[in-house]
Length: 398
Image (cartoon, rainbow, N blue to C red; front, side, top):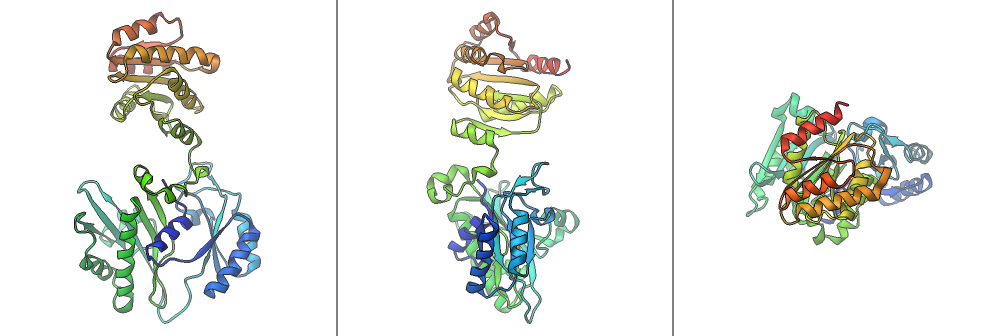
């Protein structure tokens, strides 16, 4: 589950991470009021207006702008609110901006120039350890830094039994070229950041940039936070922060019905039971010359109701040219699945306008194929993987 920047910053702040302070607003009037409040609280004379969407690169699309007067705040927030913001991380049509974050200006003048760093905390699956990735090249695309100047990216792996040790936090600050008060601030920042990551069961914390201000304070100017969905039962307060407006509507509906659905960009719908079988089925679709349009796992009870809902979800994608149903009958018998497919097909009537290939293997697979062949509905049955792939290729080539 992804959080908005303002939500991520609030989470970080609750663990003692210093942040760029801001107030969220969903109208230009509230944005002006937020700017006034920030001036009273922080003394800031300029403000940054940031679009709140679940995507990076907002500044490149005009979603992050500096305002130097209340009149500019009103104008900028009015421009950003309601826009379809297109960034390198959004769909081609962009994302609708429902709210903005009005934040204090932290690039104020002082004895030293402000400096920007990159920092993230994530799991290194190769070593089964959490890892802090950091760089002196903050405020830039980390992918470009990794490609062009990989020697400027550092990593620090943390033993899960010991946690982040003090010498590791000091090492990070040293590699960033810090000393004195700034080094102490960074050590505190890194320690609090890692604690927040672990305690909130996050899968990713990315701060780009981490800022060293002109008076050597270390703070998070941005916050990209992804939480582990499987651990949300332990964090009811964090689960309540979910913004369904930012998520795929089909995926939300499927999740509410207990279906595992991930929307993809292909032309062949994929209905399976089990994640491993889903991966194999998507390989099968690729082998046939198609592209998977989704990952849809109906689970262990592929009855008529669930199958019908799965069909309807898949068919909401206008790019789908065929559907491959690939079910292994282990817990659930294949003949029951076959009857569910037949009943769903009959219930939907003319709503199904694309070819459907059904491959059932496992308990009562022979009886299931006989049911499908004798049903009188316009289904294409298959027994083997290669046979199913050939039939998908055949219908796509028509």
